[in-house]
Image (cartoon, rainbow, N blue to C red; front, side, top):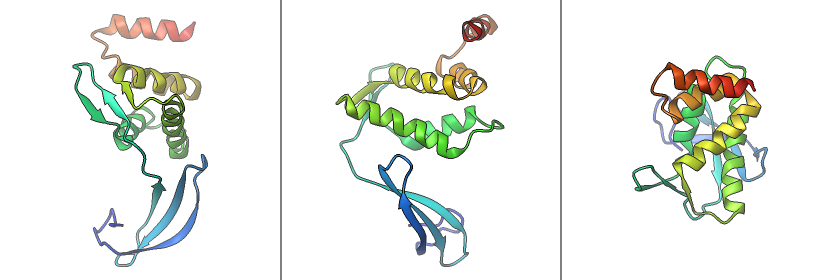
Length: 149
């Protein structure tokens, strides 16, 4: 596993345990060159989940892309990364349990928003402002009003 700090390809496993959702192995690693510690997750390889975009093209579900969006929405909020990982795990599990190999970007965004609403309303609005692509302040205000109800 390559070190995210120095790029060294050698690291040692310091700790290994199942993830909270028990669908992956969480490994704490330490770079043998610079000593930087980082976490990796080992998951069973499955049939890729496809996301159908608004224009109809399909792309492979990218967990890290969704995590980047969630981190941006939750910046300066008291939400641990583990909670965001659990949110993503829940969505993937729900889709797999239903036997879905494809999900529209609209459905995926709605699933995220549903979970964010229960987690943090500010993060919900931040994510919604990008996901729903508000065109003006009126659309944004309407979303706030519906959230307050």
